[in-house]
Length: 96
Image (cartoon, rainbow, N blue to C red):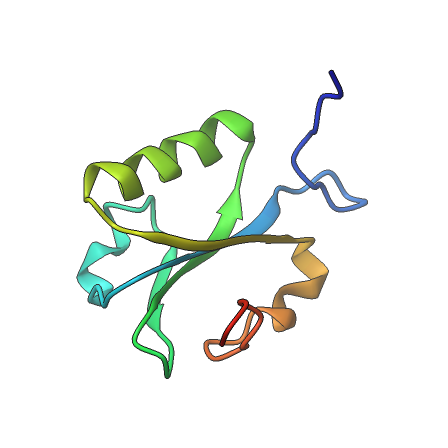
């Protein structure tokens, strides 16, 4: 079985992940999601975006999504230099 590792930039920095969930969470949830940016897009979904240190940290964030009973719509990863690709209304999700 092939092992997938989280993206890392050429400088060894963590990859930036964007978790898209159904429904709207306020920015007050930032601390709950380890300081990641919490924004809403035009479709009414919430985008949780920020650097993730490693696979264990990513799984921890996804557990928090599950524990809140949120519906996961998308998970995207980008190298830190490509952060501009994660606009608040990027429309990268299927059907968006």
